[in-house]
Length: 273
Length: 299
Image (cartoon, rainbow over all chains, first blue to last red; front, side, top):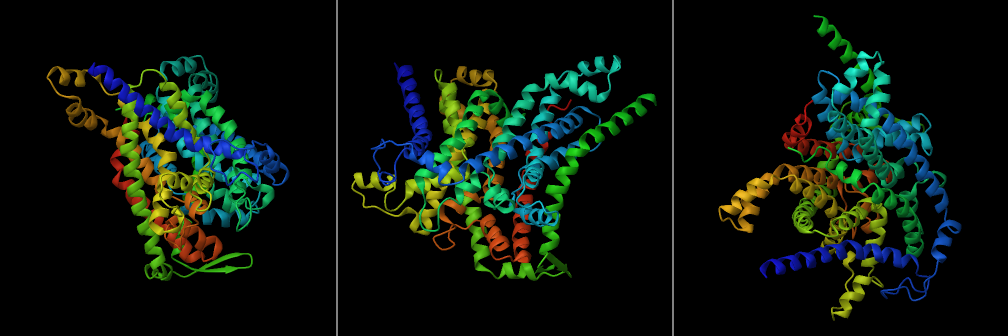
């Protein structure tokens, strides 16, 4: 009896948690289907559901451009981070480097540093080399910004791979780079997934660097585009939510499909011990 | 001797592998931080094709020290961080405890909890701005249904800060909960089992046994959140614009405005450097946590 009661108490709590998380998300999606006349309505369901906001986001605003820019920057950043991060993570995880503990500690701290501390010099640097309002400038900045955490995740995965694997490859005369690519990498694939998803999500959602470096309409990413939607006095909420729903879709699917990789990344080595 | 040479060669190779990544991080992350500090200690003049630095001066910091707006931003950021991280940690732990007991549907809950994390903060700020809207926001409609006359939550300093905190807590608590849950799952069962056999109640077991064992996991989550919260920018930029007045202006927002709106690179760099300094102090306070992270699983 007592056991049954406690069980139901936890179910009520679980439902409350689910509602707390889901209701604002529902409101975002529902409001994206409200036409101009309904956007001020607080009805639980859009009175006259319409897709006009979705059309308007692409035709009335340059949301298509922002979407493409975000995709280009996020994909390129993820690729660059995975290439550089795999090599560094492998070296720091498995090779006898002196001072690697200090390097790892420093990287972990840098990965948590507030971006405001670097954004002004970064702006001046990019201006000097003419990379303001460009893809390569933002990709370079993001690569540096996301690398420390990715190295961190990858290094933890590399630590877990048995040492015998590469010793055998060494005996067979494989070069170090070859060993990494054909022996270690397949083993570390889950780690690459996790690091890749984290990098992609961080690039997709980053705001302050994108706002500072790429403010020209042609090079805005989704967060900058959405923040600067509309004028000084009106906020076109319907259009914003339609754009937001479109921006959310690919990343939500990605994260839900690779849920395990994300959860293991959130706890990357973190909470063992 | 031979082994030593081999080891040295392997080490050299290791640095070759690590150096491209470390160079990029050094050039694009570490160098800018140092440059911010240098800039904050110089007379900065903005010219047509860049900025000029001359001399060493404390003037930029003296401007800050005498600016109430700076001290307000420091105070706001510290209080805001302390409050939101406390609520998120307590709430996140409670959610993790509920999820741990949950048999069916845990996978779905995890999936749902990941969604706010993937949401662009700017989008979440727009969403909460719409919810809080003083004229037609749904919050207003709900309070009016309960007979409470509508209030413009973003209209007064304290309620605006609380409203922003709620938006923040909504987005980041699930993240804390997942980290704590991972810690809970890894706790050894035999210790709690032994305590139960000895007649300890659920309450005692949680406070005296599980919570102390959970401390490392909690420390990591709290450290992550404190450092993230310190960079608070997207939310006030979109949701409150730092207002009403400058009441919800965070250090990062103030720094951004001084740098990019006022083009005051000297004081702006001083704000950026001060933020970095505060964060560094927090990092050093958590050095044990960092060390534990790096030291474990040593190969």
